[in-house]
Length: 197
Image 1: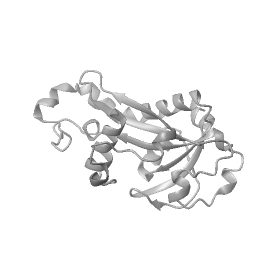
Image 2: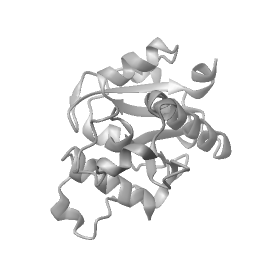
Image 3: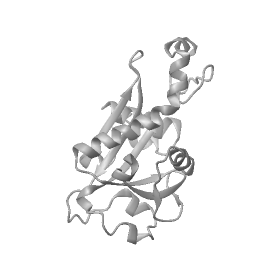
């Protein structure tokens, strides 16, 4: 349930990508959660959940069910998908970090419930590490993939995140043009073994 609470905070309150009216119970979830696996990252000292992501799994090797990327984006690089068995393909989704863990010292807003007294929760060293929560989420996705025999990922990503990952040597391949899906995002794919290499 903490996954859905954090997603509500990020997707409904912080970014407005999803309507709070559609999630009156304060939990953001959708039809893909039924066959997804999730990870949460929690700040040990404050016990606050910092980030979450999920992998949407295929319902089966012969599944005709579409992944969200296939419903919301134009995919025109089909040759990149030919050798990817559907049972070994999953979509990275709901990859998000709470605003509380994106902010530098003195920038905490009240929108997320963090007040002035919360500045002492995070050490200077922790604040320097917060940008690396993205890398920790990637590690979570790798762990989920290993446990579930997933070798390929679909993802619809912001260009800035793709540039950040590329600078780290993680190169997703574009499979279509930019789509307007929670903002301008790039549909792409990566082989998990290539990411690890």
